[in-house]
Image 1: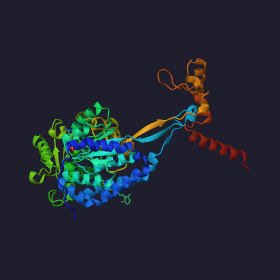
Image 2: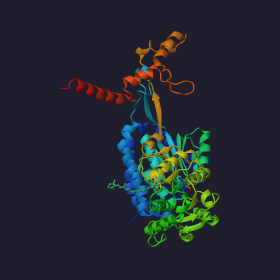
Image 3: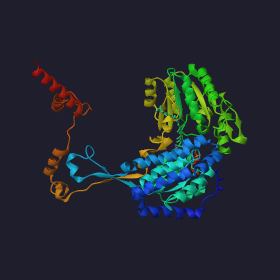
Image 4: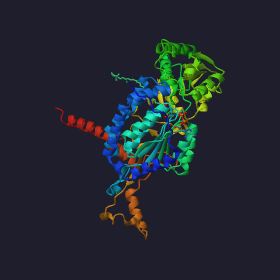
Amino acid sequence: MATKAPEFQATALEAIPKIASLARGQFRTHKTKNIEWRKTQLRKLYWALEDFKPQLVEALKSDLGKSSFEALLTEVDWVKKDCMWMLDHLDSFAKDQKLGSPDVPATYSIMNFRVKKEPLGTVLIIGPYNYPIQLLLCPLVGAIAAGCTAVLKPSELTPACAMWTKELIEKRLDSGSFSVVNGAIPETNALMAEKWDKIFFTGSAQVGSIIAQKAAQTLTPVVLELGGKNPAFITKNCGNLALAARRLLWGKTQNAGQVCMSQNYVLIDKDLVPTFIEFLKVAYKDMFPNGAKASPDLSRIVNKRHFHRIKKMLDDTQGKIVMGGELDESELYIEPTAVLVNSVNDSMMQEESFGPIFSIYPVNTLDEALNIANLIHRTPLSLFTFGNKAENKRILNEMTSGGATINDGFFHGAVNTVPFGGVGDSGWGAYRGKASFDSFTHFRTIAETPGWAEKLIRVRYMPYDFKALAFLNRLTEKSPNFDRSGKVVKGLGYWVKFLFGLGGKSAKGAFLRWLVVLAAHYMYTNRS
Ligand SMILES: NC(=O)C1=CN([C@@H]2O[C@H](COP(=O)(O)OP(=O)(O)OC[C@H]3O[C@@H](n4cnc5c(N)ncnc54)[C@H](O)[C@@H]3O)[C@@H](O)[C@H]2O)C=CC1
Ligand SMILES: CC1=C(/C=C/C(C)=C/C=C/C(C)=C/C=C/C=C(C)/C=C/C=C(C)/C=C/C=C(\C)C(=O)O)C(C)(C)CCC1
């Protein structure tokens, strides 16, 4: 039986500078540079999550009505997996990377160029409410792995999770190196008044912009993981419309659609619309045989403000509800809902749903669909394509997004080891897998010039000597194989290479061709 979460308590504003200064001081001890120390923290985080599992599952239930299935799959076990994966790969990520060809020209190879992976320092991680454990602690895994100290600011909208997070981090991880500040805008402002080596923010574009502006004043780098109005495209050639309907409905049922990467609207060939709606209803019935409200699996909306935000989208729409539509404020319940719309200016197209509702917009052609999607949001966080191979390729080519899934809902974001991030105004930077380590790491190039090489490299000193420079250029400069119009010129060098390479473009190809020629020659000369 899990104990109830401690009552939410905001961190005292006057304590915040001390917390930040302590984390900076801990970084300056240099203990985080030790890989074994980092591993110990990751192991401790793993066990803290395991030991606090009942409390966290309960907290996710009380904050978001999240089912224990999702609480484990997408939050607690998800972060535990992240710890394990990082522990397995940290040695290889953290070790110096020797730089050779093609980064370093052969003439400079004696300088022992390498990249040292350095922790950025002390970082601030600000989390959103929808996945309060995953989206706060996965960046922390990256920060620990990279050797940073960190202060975390959970969302105040999920108070039970915020309080347990504070307890598990501060009781189990290295004291002072990792702390949690609880609170809302005043506390975040107090944190933003401190100097950080990086700020990792997940949340709305509106607040992301405030954070970026404040960070710019002190030239603090930021990662922004923001939202987007994400399109799904369904063409005549999608193949399996029932599957498309089921998979897209999945994106709007997990966490009651409070997933920043799920689809906001579906652009679908107009002839498919009636069948698509029928398939949505079939999928809905399969997922919720007793109705969505009675299902133990469906989360609730986080609070009244967000409930009314989503409700307003439905109130304002000129479209027709074709699936769902039930709302119950007393339970913060919104039924998975699809709205058939006919205008790009409809509230269902113009606002980010971030809830269990989405719109269906019939189109005549793929051209039209691409125009609309680029008009609504040119750089969404995700997009989804359900077409034939050529159409899927065309959509990916003609519209960008943070990530994309072909033939499914947000699968590109459902694997914790592949890079995840937005593009343009849906986010800056990426994390997950190695990208989490990289995100908190400074890649510091180091050169080491041997004393004995002094004569060889003295061309740089004054008085300058043009003869020596010309000699160096002869050694290091490559002459172009293209003319002033950008066309490749097939000169003597090209034909010599072609001839000796037997037409192969790579050394390996040429080698294999030579093998065949020699074998043929051998067989010919040894024929009986
Ligand atoms: N790209 C991604 O990975 C994700 C993006 N999101 C986006 O986040 C949004 C929903 O999450 P919310 O928690 O409502 O985001 P939010 O932007 O309201 O809050 C995020 C954090 O910022 C703090 N905050 C709020 N207002 C602030 C202000 N004026 N100044 C300083 N700090 C402030 C909050 O306390 C919270 O910790 C959606 O737009 C969604 O698309 C959500 C989850 C993941
Ligand atoms: C088991 C065998 C096989 C393989 C089976 C497979 C591949 C099973 C796949 C299961 C699936 C699809 C599980 C779905 C998981 C969904 C998850 C984890 C969702 C996560 C959501 C997240 C992280 C949300 C994040 C939200 C964010 C960032 C946001 O709001 O922006 C074989 C290989 C077939 C062989 C036999 C055995």
